[in-house]
Image 1 (spheres, rainbow, N blue to C red):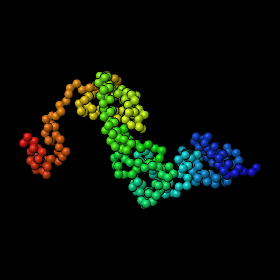
Image 2: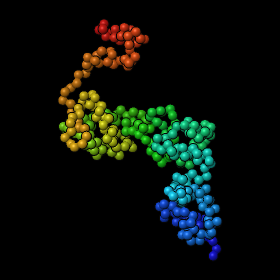
Image 3: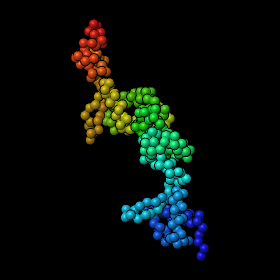
Image 4: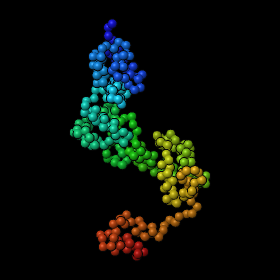
Length: 294
């Protein structure tokens, strides 16, 4: 019987492998796919499929080599040069944290012009994208196109899509939490997080801008901590089980200034370097002198 054409056989092999969650060995393919020629003729076909990124090679726990269909992303890497594959693998390993383009140069030992050219090629294929980090805005990071940057990269809920600190949105959240705590009398962190998520304030973009993600427990905790620091609310023992903190409106108004904040030392940014006989000292401090004159 005439053997199946290579393209038709490749389709049959792919269909068979797709039905094998753990992949299949060469022997299993030869035994289960109709029209497969001898093992000697099957191996070159498998090698061609590997080269064309149609399948991938895995090593099972027992050391046996097995084959699986390549993912859509792996198929996109078809035709990449060895240097492009090397750069792509480094971007892949970086995950949703991204990788600095200069770090790619160090990790791959490729020249910067070559890195730049490869990144343009990968971006044109839709394999990667460029992003900026709030921690280092001047650094260009790259990551896989289908991933969303981590909170450490984007700054999380408190930053706009342009990675600007969103003071307007923070004010909206603060006022909403204050009103809710005042209305309820006392709320736990878990309860107030659930409320603000379901209230529509931030859900699906909410009232503060398109594409905004829901606030998480840590985000709400940050706002509550700032309100407590300013004396607008206070943490109290929770009646609920567990370690979930509770909050209520502060009934005792904190003074605007204290003895410590009125003295220049209480607000001095270089107080750690201030010492007698040093370049910064109480004897030479012009702010301290003004305060004493007053």
